[in-house]
Length: 581
Image (cartoon, rainbow, N blue to C red; front, side, top):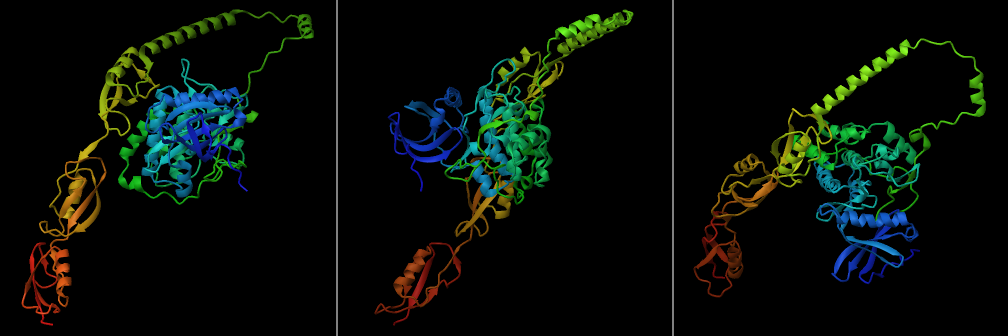
């Protein structure tokens, strides 16, 4: 027996009618609903009633609404409203029909390199927008990546979002000591150690997600969350090519950098990781991008949760408060205990030690002072020679130049095409943001030229192979070929292309071709009556002329000119003769 959800059919805040439950998680349930004022379908995320009285969870829920409201990005699920109706606290969000990335992985297993990059790039674009706005998602995983029916990728569930604050741009955990809130397979080592964190925890989770897309499996597994935590802390993520040989060394290096255990060794943020991924894509051949992934088992949870967390899919690994075993936490500094009275008395009655010469200590002090002076001089000189590359990603050239000038650096500017970064904005720098640079050297700053587009060449009238070569030379892909009869275009030549010549397309986009089958063969109408013969010829595009007598209207076609089967231009007159009976 299935219990009916009491919220279904109710009206929240006098506006939102709840129609169907979509999924349930650790802190909230998502429903499909209707905004009765604007007559649009929305997703209603309702906090579990048991958590409404918890001020921390309520604050986190409201913070999610405010955080997403700060983002205006096509790859982020929009929040329309936030409110409460009695004991029901809810968010009204963009409804995204389709599935999540976990469903795709469960159905298909590993993806091709092209498909994996097509998914990762919009995810990183969304995270990059969040990082630029000073937000850290902290719960990136396939369940929180939605794919619309039209194939658009959207990042959802900013329930664990944190604001970057302080000089170091760090966020700290609000969970109790010895616990961590998140999904164990995607936790960065610093989250497990309960150290200060920043946007690079999202970079780490994105690296895990990229490994999962390329191989069909998670890099770390275990019967218990503690085993997975231990692997995050002590084992490097293996190269994807070990499980998927078609994956090249470029992507192995990106996964290794994104999942480095030391945050300082990772890309600075999602924008830098996105730029690195796009550069790698440009070095890969079409064969490498489209190589078939290995046959892999469907993804299953790392360990049993014992709970059903979705009404439309099998149990998944959920976001929860996880206990961190004490042996995985860094040791606490020892606390010096005050000496007891007896210890003091014993020290007092000890016989005095032989007096030692003070000269060694004097020389040690002199040497230490000299070393300190040398170290200070080196530090000052280093500060005069080196500095840290400031954050300029997403800035215009003028803004980047002003930022570099302020840091005592100068830049050399080059342009590259980008499908995700707006024209005129900085895609990447070399050295990267946060890395040390010599002030006398220039920083290479890559500016976006916007998306690259190429023009469809004029190929109408060309033989098929020549047309295909013209498309390839224009860096386009010959698409599907269909055939049609044509009076004017010779057989085997192109009648038309779609998009037509002059259209602007992305590099590698397909162009469909219609190829001429030549003139139309004359149908065979001998033996037909007049009406049937006339219809057959006119349907084929010919004109009909009769010859001879058909006195009673019952005669059959005895001959035709031109004869059946001969190719003729449409509009040609076909003369038919009839027998008397």
